Image (cartoon, rainbow, N blue to C red):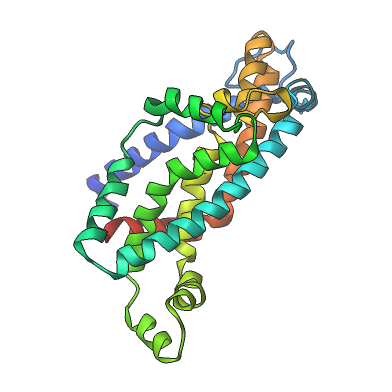
Length: 273
């Protein structure tokens, strides 16, 4: 039986790419399940399950409070991001005027602006308005910097939906507000899943803003708490590995739940717009 060279090359390339992500995760898993005194190779999976590393990381790094902070920030930011992103994308997709095209290009261009370039003036503003160490302050930052991507994806996806849906709903007496929220918004599940995963990962893993704007111990996010824990416990690599694994589990779970919508929403939202 002959082997197709092109198929073999594609599978080999796929395996190499998969290994880039799977190998570090495997090492993280094996390290987190080993006793600190275990000097076996990092490639060897332990013949026992040492779960004390997770308990030590959770308690010493105060990950319980950090997990709560991350959850509050993520839920609030995603709720605002989805509603604002979809609502802003609706007129941009349905009314192709010069002004709307300019706004769309402006949002797309904003995607390439490094967020840290405005850190100093943003920090001064937040101190002046007493937004430091507040949930609403960090949520506002996260929504602001994730909104261009959300609008980009939503605009492309809404552009693939037939305008006849709008016209039929308007003939039935719906307002533009009702057309969007009652007719179109329920159809946006695929691209909403894409926005939730892409932006959710960035919000959950945010360090660059959280380390400056969430400085009080009880307000620290997961990444900031874990970074401080790593600095203080560099010799206890098993604890750090366990904490890192705990931080990645919510993201993995979200992707597994939403993966059937992710690819279709991402491709439809990026092709047209």
